[in-house]
Length: 354
Image (cartoon, rainbow, N blue to C red):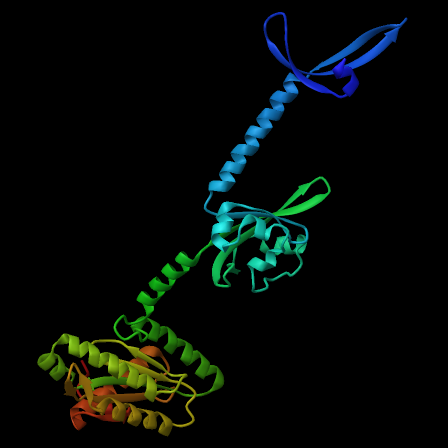
């Protein structure tokens, strides 16, 4: 009678004569016949339906478990870019909790606009391939991240799934590898490899603009004395001081590189005249010759500088390298130290430089 009064569907378990338990839904309806109360009981076997529902819940739980344990941040967005789900990895990456971001626009996680401002289909197509964007954490700090967006359609409903990955460590590793390949570890100056790349680009620009580029070979004088008298640590310190002085003496657009033990090279672009290169060479020699204190000892160095000019003396990298090196060699042979020389054809009459 209670079931009949409720007039609701009731889920129960029934036992068949063969002892098998089944899930069922029953409806109980009160009927009155000739003053007697009877009940109509309708039963529907929903065992298959319940089995499918349990399997679906199990799959959903497994999927949720996977999403909660993966290292990549995963979030779902509606067609306006509002966040609908946010897994624990995304919480860790961005520093926001689930409750803090649900319903907010994904722009709170990306301070720098990405190409395609529309968070509809156009935006999804723009970000469909994995691409690097700038992410922003809750504390305001930005970081490089890889982001991919995929479109999902459920009937007429359009939504997006976004997978994000913090690539800070990868970027730092790439930068370390690049620095090791292109910069001198002692002085931080470009090394011989990067010098070649920059000289090649300088020649191309000068060729297009019909301008000149000066190449300087700088060899330190009396450096061996510091190494012999005060040790290699003192020599390394002297090289770092010389590097700073060379950079200060040059213009911001110039390149100063260390190519050997006590050998440096300078690339001077956009020269107004040869006199400008010679003036910079004088400044470099004066800066290097200024006494320096290393570990309580006053040390002095000098510099011999050979200068050549593109395209006057050579029109390719090997030719320029040869001319500058030959001019520097002549300086050392004729002047002793602390002087510079502009290359001339007469320099080829001197013994070849080592």
